Structures are given as structure tokens and as C-alpha cells.
Length: 159
Image 1 (cartoon, rainbow, N blue to C red):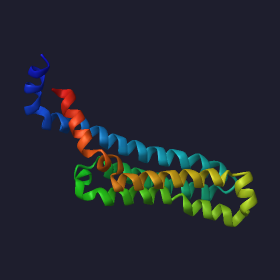
Image 2: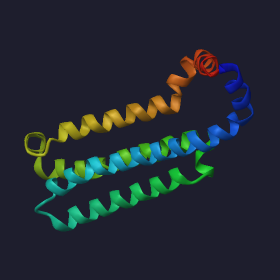
Image 3: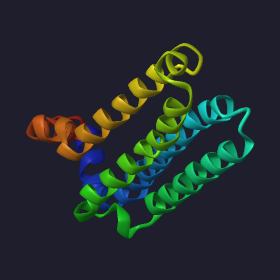
């Protein structure tokens, strides 16, 4: 039975990958962009609570950048292998966009207040983790390290 399933599935494997895997990767990238935006907006809202103009400007800017990133992520051409570096740079720029309001807050309130009251150190850790993830993605660490074994494992299970 297993060989019959493998025999019938192999001709359709390329189409199945297109149907099932590519949209999931696109939604995964869109979800990452949504999480980046969603993780910085609360900090902006409470950090600039007494400065409504700065708060609104930063929230609108981050939201627009996030919307643009999600739009690019869902675009077919953007998901081709040749755009891997560009995709990485888009996500890095979105994550680094939080540096501008963080620096603004730090210059206004000082280091002690930024850490004690605004948890600036947590925001810096979050940005470092986003940048680490983008670096691992751009370097294709998991795929490159286990490419041969991963391919054998996938096809062995389908036989």
C-alpha cells in the first residue's frame, strides 16, 4: 500500500509543494512581520503616552512599514530564491525601525529611566533576537546543515 501511495503521489509532488507549502511560508513571513509590529506598538503606546504626536507618528510609521512588509511577503515575485537577501533586509529594516523611537526615548529620559520605567533593555533583547533570526534565515543554517539528510528523510517516509 505504501509503495502505491508513493507511486501515485510522486507525479503530483511538485504541484503539492506549490499548493501546500508556498502559501504557508508566505503566511509564516506575514505572521513574523505582524509579530514584529505587534510587539513594538505597545511599547510605543505606553512609552510615549504623554506625547501624543510622537506616539501617533511612530505607531503610524511602524504600522505602514509592517503593512508594506506583509504586502511584499504575499507577493509571488518576492518569494523567489533570488530575493532571499532582499527579504532578509526588509525584515531587518522593519525590526530596526524600532531603534528610532527607542533612541528618541533614551535621549529624552536618560538611561536609568529608560531601563527602569520603559523596559528599554527588553526591547533591545527583542531586537537582537529578531536580528539573530534574520541572520540564521539569510545564511540558511538549518537547510544547509541538513540538506542531504532532510531530503532523504522526507522521501524515505513517503515510500
